[in-house]
Length: 604
Image (cartoon, rainbow, N blue to C red; front, top):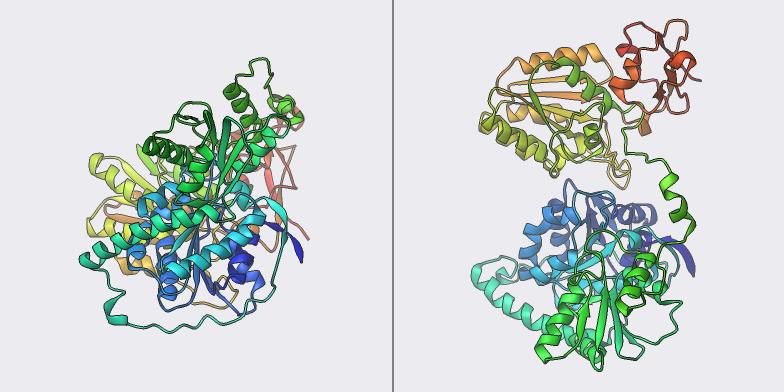
């Protein structure tokens, strides 16, 4: 049967139909929907969990795989950095059941700190990598990835990119049943699963031989294609293969084309492609992986073929590609100077007229209230604000301007510690969300207490993993599968670590928050404030605020101080106006207004 599926949905179904029984991961755009699809689809035939971080998720999946049960772990490209330690060792140890490491790259980047190309990691860590070009191919290829992993006894990487993850296609679903169960049988196997230097050395040799053999076998794998003829060639892989074909659709000439969907790159197929060619243009996201491989093969076999792409500046070196970008690149590559390659689609014609909408904290977001309380409490004092990954990163925007640093998950806590060493006379605040606190915040807070650093940690607890769509975490009493779980108390964990002071406050009570900040700022050592306020997506009852025109003085302080998208100065005499369709009635603006011109009303 055919189903209209998002790429991530297709990958989830393909994995389940391919025999994967244990799914773990940590939410991160653009990978999140895989586990959400598993949770919605399965009826206890498979096991799925949101783990506390990517390292934990990978180790849980590895435990299942060494017991003979096929597993998949999901993450985005920066999550692979967190999981890389166990992943490197696991490839040397191997697995018994299949294990697929699904990594979603984010060219652009659209919602990430960095642009990273996981194919590099595959080459560095000596992993087999699968790289689908369409959601339809992703469904079949992930099954192939699981099958190969089981055959070779090693984990494999399944790499996708944003437009494959979130693109939709009509996918031919071959089988609706999942079958079997997720109970395995672990065999101690004479210490096979214990990594020692001698074992790593011997397995390194085996991995090198395996990759060389797979390079030959991949020449006939359906995910790799060779077509066309002529003296000019085009090579691509992943979603760029679609862009390339769209860009060449109106070109009447015949060209040789090479599609790469697996790594190690099939050298024999590449040799067939390069044979008889004079020049090649390579289009790929993100880095010149295929391009470098073709250059290596040309050097190895002394082929006089000009390879063009990112290294030569023929293709953009950063960001996403598109069919329009490749049309321009192809035209310049072929020397068609007479071709006008200015984009002519309707969006391109009007894009300069569309107002820019920067990302902003939602109206009623508790993080805005928390940031404002800190800023207001310490005005006039020198302070630094170390941020973290989450919705609250948006606190860097004006008028809040409350995020001075943002590096990676949990790093705000430790960067603040580094700053307090070098600037001891400054107040150093760190901000972290509840989900990120569980992810990587706990060991960093332990480091602060152990080394007696002087920081103020603000834990912004909105009771969800908001940035990636509201997934549960250990501080919420339910699992990914909706089953009840133990509710981990952030207060209890922080208290057990031994901080110097701890307070929990209502994020929307401005006076309470300011008082707590002032008390923490007066103390040395590690001082923690937990700001509690529900994410607006969790609100069950909504109220709204209104401006009393007879009282409002048009001072504009509420707009200038808060930057709430529900507030504007569009009323009579440029008085404050509140958009009731956006307002959640948090009441922060009412507390900020010195003239009591804002009133809070309950909605039925």
